[in-house]
Length: 332
Image 1 (cartoon, rainbow, N blue to C red):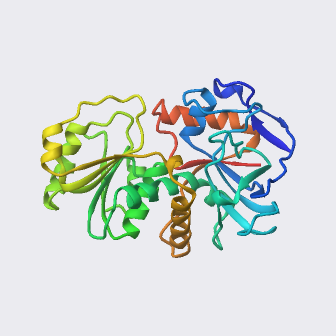
Image 2 (image 1 turned 90 degrees about the vertical axis):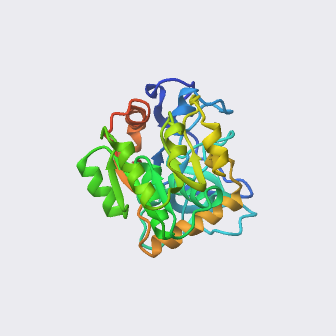
């Protein structure tokens, strides 16, 4: 099979494209003919060596995939050849990734693809959708009628947060970087869309928060969170969700935090159990079928351009170039 792979961690240009053996599915594994895979920031951290996980070289990056089932292992019970599936959690903890024509995936990490959803959409929504669902409902305990704030309402995770919060009956404040993204974010359902370049941004958020008695759930996507600002805008017993910023060491306003019964939750999607993630997958499928969830694709590229795709992701994640809205999807 053709695959994108590395033989040592390093720059995006370390990614090679060529022939590797097609994997054989183990007893509990499903062999998926990859119709689409997508790129996430964690893929670039693993490839670059910023996150230490066991990698068996040649190592194939990529967490997300979607496509038809080619074959199943002897103990697989949930899928059969010909089924269309999507999933995430590959390339982690010693597993091989998805940037290849075929991938062997344990059935625990796969979900049926809803009728009408393309492989590109399903792959684009996999990690970011599961992440948003875990953060909002398992960790954030979001309820109908609450007020939520999210930075970057058109990004991979941010766009999912906006859609899921609206599906749950919340009011959503989101930030974006330009007028085009503002219109896009409004089309996703956000109630208040603010320009994060505005010199009066904090005052604008505070005014909306005060009119609602404070923010119930603050979803922080920034790598350097300003917790002093955030804590001051929260409603009593509000929840602050953090899912980025490995190197961040911000000042923390202890007094205002504890006297308002606030909760600060940090989480990583890959710590969730298969059962917890399956609950998310089932929720995503139901919302897609109901027209409440549409994964956002920012760029489609051929699998052979995986190195360029990793470079583009890094330019937007680390370089903050703002040239990408939605996910990069690679097509074998």
